[in-house]
Image (spheres, rainbow, N blue to C red):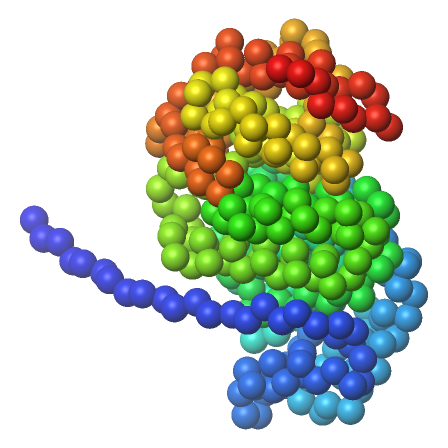
Length: 393
Ligand SMILES: NC(=O)c1ccc[n+]([C@@H]2O[C@H](COP(=O)([O-])OP(=O)(O)OC[C@H]3O[C@@H](n4cnc5c(N)ncnc54)[C@H](O)[C@@H]3O)[C@@H](O)[C@H]2O)c1
Ligand SMILES: [Zn+2]
């Protein structure tokens, strides 16, 4: 009998740039980043994957991209841009995955080339997955264009698509080589997408940074009035808390704990139950409401703090309940989400709850009766899509 031991470390490092007009000729950040990675004698080939909605609302984007790189003879941009329908559909329909893989093959994108994805979290998750599995991993740059993707999904290390009806069933841990958060893209977001990503900021504040939660309370009105500076701070603080957690803990989630998924065990299920008409950020908001109220019901979170959390979600016009959670069958399916959550992670079920605003703790089981109680309290609060008021509980 003999044993050979293999042992090596790989160091990952990438920068998240906060910028505006990334493809303006006056903005050299992206060019500089590529230049620093340049190997003598090699031409860097770039394949762009673009969210269709972004392309439509920023019609000069593709010509700007071509113009931006035109004068650089060590960089070759593939002329054809791969345009993918935005939203969860991008992750649900395998044809989009195939489309990117075929383009990678057709345009001979190799492991020294770059796939640059411009879009919301869904297109980035899909493009990141395609980049990670083609040729066992292409270099990948993300240019997130939504609040959620600039503050959370685009700055982390995960990608994925939905498969067998399950969220993110296929995916990898695969850090990008760089991220460029271009605030200009946010100017075309719908009201709905302006607020939906804020739930991820509230989530990370709740488990890690009570001061940030207070800041969100103070700035909510300004953010709802589209204050640019306030939103930029929200995104940067949200991204910072996410990357700090990822870098200092368990980046590839080898354990069973996933604190950044506070509120997500139900959120993923709610998205599916609504056939994705409830979008991720909104589902996370409902998930936060459920787990905050649950934390109050099991005695770990003070009532006034629970009310502050629900009020903040309501201030951002984020949902805290949806009528799909009234039917008994859907409630059972929701409870099944706990099981799916632990199957996804493996090991013992581990759920983050709250001790206080800014402080989470983990449990390994949840009480179904108390979850249902939390749901019925939230239902009392829910009036209709236009009018949210907090019921007495
Ligand atoms: N990988 C991760 O770690 C991680 C973390 C959190 C969330 N996610 C995933 O992110 C996805 C949600 O991302 P999202 O909230 O960015 O939504 P999204 O990508 O689904 O985009 C929402 C809509 O906004 C459009 N859009 C994108 N940018 C726009 C812009 N600048 N102007 C106007 N419209 C624009 C899209 O085309 C789409 O119609 C979910 O699939 C979720 O599971 C992944
Ligand atoms: Zn999320």
